[in-house]
Amino acid sequence: MDPELVLPDLSPRVEAEVVARMVSKDRHEWADQAARTGHCSRPVRLRGRTLAVNTRTGEVRTTYASDWEESGIAFIRCGNRREAVCVACAREYASDTWHLIRAGAAGGDKGVPSSVSEHPMVFATVTAPSFGLVHSAKKPGTVGSSRCRPRRTKTLCPHGRPTWCMATHAPDDPIAGQPLCEECYDYHSHVVWQYHAPELWHRLRTALGRHLARRLGITATRLDEVLSIQFAKVAEYQLRGIIHFHALIRLDGPKDAGPFAPPPVQVSARVLAEAFRTAAAAATYTAAPAGDDDTTRILGFGQQVDARPVSRTAREGLDTEELSPEQVAGYIAKYASKSADDISPTTRDTAHVSRIKETVARVALACATSTTLRDWPTDNKGRRPYETLGKWEHMLGFPGHFPTKSRRYSTTRAAIRSERRRFQIAKSNKDHAQRVLDLTGTNPEQDADEETTLVVGQWEYVGMGWLTDGDAALATAAAVWTREHRREQAAARRANRAGTR
View (cartoon, rainbow, N blue to C red):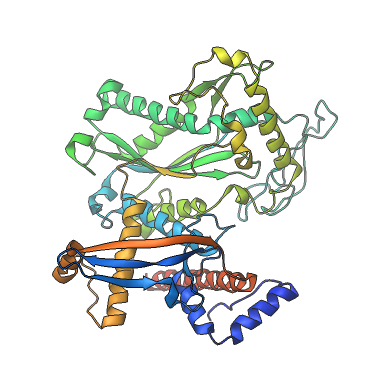
């Protein structure tokens, strides 16, 4: 059964706008326009036209104009990856991420050979250290006690608060991730660690190369002559408001051997996993004092480090300790569409998160007026330590990108978007001119047209969003319906595959 198109609780005004749209004479034209944006929640409004100029004959013709629309305005996708902002564009972003990750893990697509699936790969996770006791949430099916923090000896913290909690918290419990004692929690170190988390990841990559070189019996400076480390990672907020990283790490041959060359046989996936754990424990960074009254800190990752081999055979269930490329791609894509507003469905407006933001603002102000930091070296852009911390308050002090990858891991988002555009153009030509849909990229007629046609756009920005809140509600509801429909289809396909085994 298909999911229903559900509209949330609407105000009388928005409900009236929805009804007016549903009975309007141009409702079908609007529905087509909304479908062309993928039911984007906040499309960009443009006015203008696109011209096609034949460079051989000089002929100029209009291929599209906003005047052709009933409203006189053209709508295009906002492209925002945040699900809290736009469900449709976040779904497309997550889908692109899935294809990008899967191509680098399984190969056979997007210009990546299938042989990469035989390369050593691990799915690794590194977390932040503890900055104080917090309430923990137990996931369904967790082995062992489900209580938050059981204690045989019940002791109090220096501020007279209990250091135990005998309750069981669900992941959506508002108290999950909150400190047992806010006075004991080290918010200052939390913010400093969060700000330097990208640099710590860089140090981990360097340490991983050194450990692999030692395993191969060569110096670290010669590692590039033997193998290269490729990765795709995503940052995710834990309930306590601190970042941790998930990464798919793959070993290739030396860069001089070309992209996706096989690595040395001496390094297996399990050797790579062992080297990652050792590197995560060894990676450190000395952070500058965050103010005149502060001290330097030696930062590192927490004790919770995981590295599991990734193998194509895991898809068949032949090794329960390994993960399949599809599993890893789906997991990373899931968090790639999250935003700072999606720290957790329950922790956005908690006192803990507010305290983190206040600490970020206070530390940024202290560092801006610090005389101690004047003696510290600047970064490669000439910036003093913590100079940009204040601008990342909404990110709880994290200045990095959520999804990142090495340059030669697989394809690029630009290539995926270009492939999608070619498909849409080819499909549009077929629908409007009854031409054969050719997706091979070797259509001589199409190639000749591309070589002799110059496309020129004359567009001006009008605004953001649909013209009414009712239209926005309809578009968002349609995007949610599409997402749920595809999830049900995927679940049905998985059930069918499981039934045929």
